[in-house]
Length: 209
Image 1 (cartoon, rainbow, N blue to C red):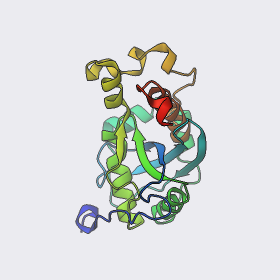
Image 2: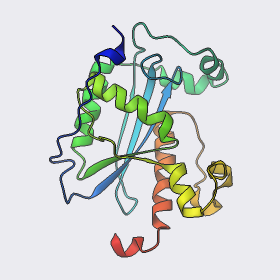
Image 3: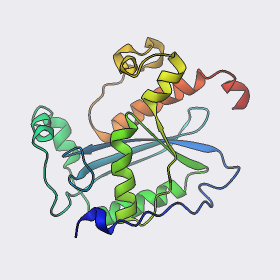
Image 4: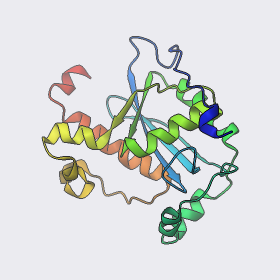
């Protein structure tokens, strides 16, 4: 039986971490994988950085995961990994079973002092893996469908086309001089800070904070 056939999607029971009236916590996530499709390919590494409304870093989560039995490796993805030996070594250091990592990630999310929203660049790649792994290996997804795509957010702020939201085309003042290392936690921190800078540009944001 395939992984997808066994997934039972569980929406979050909002309580301590996600109750009505709780502040939003922006959880920037970045993953590394051996292919583009959850259920066919494996997530190799998960990094997450939680930020408050004011841009304050509230905590980090990081883990490397063992590949899933019966999954394949995408040829093009693995060819790209061959050009990134340091990042590959980092994501293969001390990998753990998904059955251990994902419940620990859920516990971390629930311990945040507010409602967690997933933030990713691009969300179309990262969030399907996060959703699949949470439901499959933890039995619940504290994010629900609360996910923000940074590139789409940039479109709204800049009034531009999607192709113009590549990082090299964003305003220089939005970007910090941080290397994109393809190490999941490094990239989650980089992209989380970018998102928080973008939030500060929203009209009236300072009055609502």
